[in-house]
Image 1 (cartoon, helix red, strand yellow):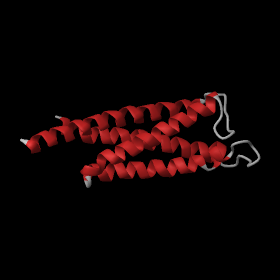
Image 2 (image 1 turned 45 degrees about the vertical axis):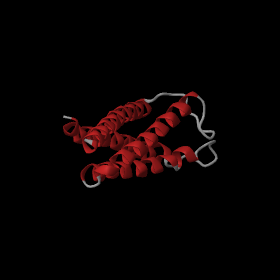
Image 3 (image 1 turned 45 degrees about the horizontal axis):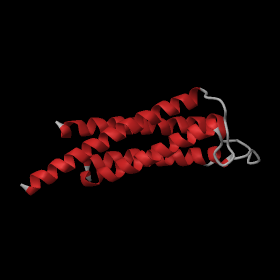
Image 4 (image 1 turned 60 degrees about the vertical axis):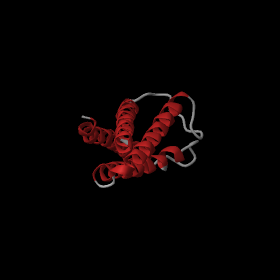
Length: 146
């Protein structure tokens, strides 16, 4: 039963991560790309958003590859993606409640709310996937020792 849930959880995780990257891309293209460098913390959005898009794309590819071709490394990809998503969510929240390297936005607009939702979704699905992988590894170790 556990192994049957792995691929759906990988797909769900990848969809949430891809959605977060997509939101960052559209927001960068539509809103933040031309933010003047004189604005305090402008690098958070002018550089940070494209970096988020790139890491999101790499994470989606890594999840797909590890789930299908390198299953023994899947837990590392899941852990790394979880840390990335947690950092992205923390940055979003900090930018709305205080500041991140000088960048602050006190308003929770639609894009920020969407980003928060998909990043929480990613964290929940990645946590479930990590737990499932841990259970599978434990079961495999028990089977090997008997």
